[in-house]
Image 1 (cartoon, rainbow, N blue to C red):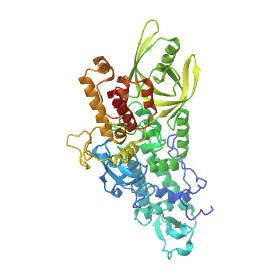
Image 2 (image 1 turned 180 degrees about the vertical axis):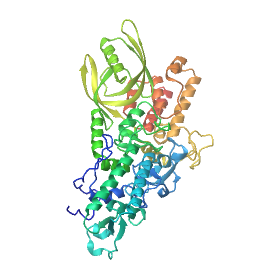
Image 3 (image 1 turned 90 degrees about the vertical axis):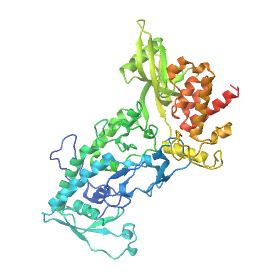
Image 4 (image 1 turned 90 degrees about the horizontal axis):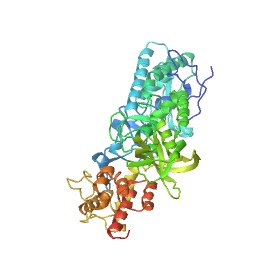
Length: 545
């Protein structure tokens, strides 16, 4: 057997796999043997990037990184934020990972449940193997490689340190070195002597045991298959990104703990990175299974937030996310379309009639009533927005290839508000704390007077924009405005106090031109939609409509 390289730098080329250990394996637990030259990479996967120790109580960060709970920095107050101004979002921390170093909300950082269980199993198997190795004659000499030599400047290297000796093969020796805290995350190692047959066999056996034991911990709790593009929620639970997308189309709660999630736009965005360590572990240990999962995801058309199959489109009226839409279906072509939707996933697209619009809303059929002559009454609810990329005709109705339109992440929304309001003084000229009865919560900037001009609307806090909208609705109800009649509220509900829902609700009830309402569908922030609503209100009260 030829000797491998003494060490492998991060991201190096893989060597040919060693002989596969298939004992006890089946189709769902296949083991992809990892080249022995990547032993250092394997152990680096379970090291904390901050303290270099084996990860303990790993916490998930919104940038996709993971650190030990003890390595999480202290928190500080975040100013100029009123959108989602809950106590855990008003507290922030600076990311301890040098390649990020951004500010994260405390509420977005949590113990990583799946990674914690996976690392626990891996460490337990390595500890068992270490104990068993004490009775073997096999030993491994290992030495930490000098930093200057690693980066190609051997003339600056420190005096060579003595090698350390551990029982077992190279995998166990490298783990023991990391466990003892004698190797930094970025350090490389040198193994003294060539790879012996006993070391190769021991490493292969230990690696196979680790993979089989950890396999059950990397299954998604929605599809019960190997994680594909794993995303960790702020509550610490991990799911395949396509699975979470599918769930959040219909609900806003974590499928495991039922905590309300604010990441619907994030799971479709490049600003919601995958869980880095789980992604690397899966691609290293189960590359064949991962390739199969990737192919299935592509086949299902759930890649990059884009539905790659044709969707039927009803050309009729404006609809909005989270809002009900009632339809009387009588044309033969749409009767056929609805029958096919009911046989499928009960969804179809809705776009405004007249000149064909490229923006629309996906509707999910909630209830349907058929009449003897073939007509039907539909009750639907909006799930998400879309942009039409291509369209055609199928049996008389429009079909289209679409791309979803999603909001930016909550973190970006908060940063936008802070940037637009940071130079604005409050009513008394000082930035104080919000009153104790403030719905926004604790520590937000004191509320200023309601914006009265278009310029003030642009610089007002998100909470003040929402307050202007709520005050307007209350005044109109006091004046018995016909567009707030009981029959209207019976359909769309009372005025919501949620800034996410308010613009969609107001667009449904306020008698504004459809061309104005249509602009809401192309927005990507809650703040932008609230400002549009406030501009409508200012124009309404000036009788300029």
